[in-house]
Image (cartoon, rainbow, N blue to C red; front, top):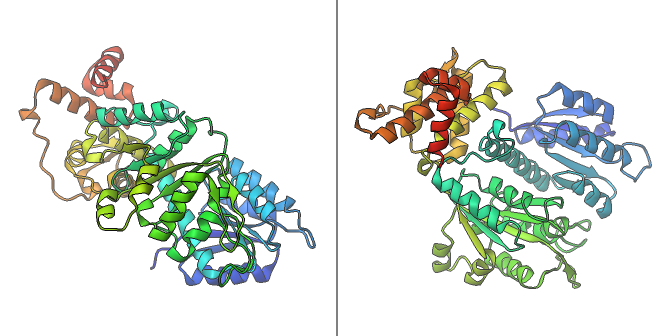
Length: 445
């Protein structure tokens, strides 16, 4: 059986529109559900199992206000804040689309829609949602939103973030795939004076090259084939806030030239339009590529790099965050067990050895997937190495460790076995709670 690309709820009052969208989506591997009214959509969302919502903004006949759709959008973002919502409008109203985007919609499509763009937008939004869930595993629930960073490498990153976030400068975040670049970008925005303004993302690796400039700068009707209506770009949507450009190394030289111009003068011009528009946007870019190598190969502009990396933040790979992997794994376990209704509570010693010794080429994203799979496979309360499916590993050579190294290993192992519960970890080690917290604090200084 082929796995579904995701379940999409289509909320539109017109049955023919719902069926036409469903046919296109099913052909691309999606599962679909339909709702003819906001009330029906709300019921289906409450039932669960929906990965994204395609929402018509105009339910009532001969109505162009979008009020019905906007009310449902507000409700969805309150009750299901992480659900991607792509709004539909048959009236080509840019103002209405902007209202929806500022109210929390992820993107918008105009009727008649372009099938290629429909699929691209949905796949991109589902990928972003998965990335955000993975990034959330970097956050310890007991730390009230603080990023887990017991390792010196990540503490140094967060110290830099706190220093540069208030300064309104461009930031380049580098690091391997899966290290949490998007999470750090959001953290920067949250600590800046733009915290209450739009945070808009565009993954340049997920958008076809032919659409990137339109996505960034917008276009006017007739600017190119299939440009049937005016459309604003991400820079205008992000006006006053932050634009996060992921996989900046994928941008073509032509796109790079236009980005450089915007960064230099703060003006954008929609495709097909001659009049420039001023925007006030802080740009945060990210890449897992070596931009200096791309410059040497003639594939990236040196002057654009200078504009992007007023401050550069290099995220360490998970294998360099030895003090973090057990706590991250415990946090992933707790989140996955809750999500899937499982009673798994921790890791067996052989699983801890496997977690410690695995190189994690996919970093935190890989760790999250591995732990979630193990939660589903585990047949008792502890995850074993076999459930992780990481291949054979050597036992941790504790007999060759120094006393400090052994203490660090045993404390982190106890925390992971206890699912991140410090009191349970202390009992496992035969320590009082105060003694355990004192040792844990010493390891973090």
